Figure 1 (cartoon, helix red, strand yellow):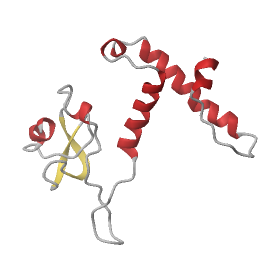
Figure 2 (tube, rainbow, N blue to C red):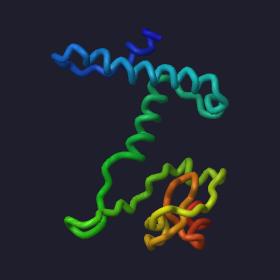
Figure 3 (tube, rainbow, N blue to C red):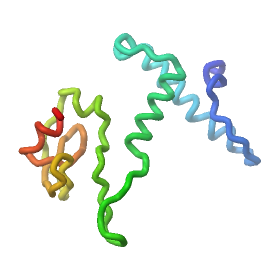
Figure 4 (cartoon, helix red, strand yellow):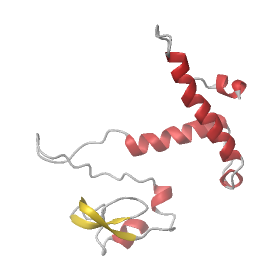
Length: 136
């Protein structure tokens, strides 16, 4: 484990004594996740080495949580209208069900207000737009 962690270690110089301890934790978590991935069925379909696996995980988080341009009135409620779901998840055709939302959401297809959402993608969708969003 130490050899794999040291290969792609998070290395930021700092005068804080606790930084190496803090930076070690995500490295170990990534190493353990990679070992679990290698033992899973997904590794047979798409084998990844440690570097490719780390890049894939970072790409997923960047795609999902990166800052996005907001649409709305300045100083008012900002709405993020881009696609928050990876194409692999959106088009996989598994376990996508329409469900009720507690609040109104913007439809991921037509941008209108909707009380429904995809339970897997967590994206607001009209019932009429549901099939279109998951196929195009």
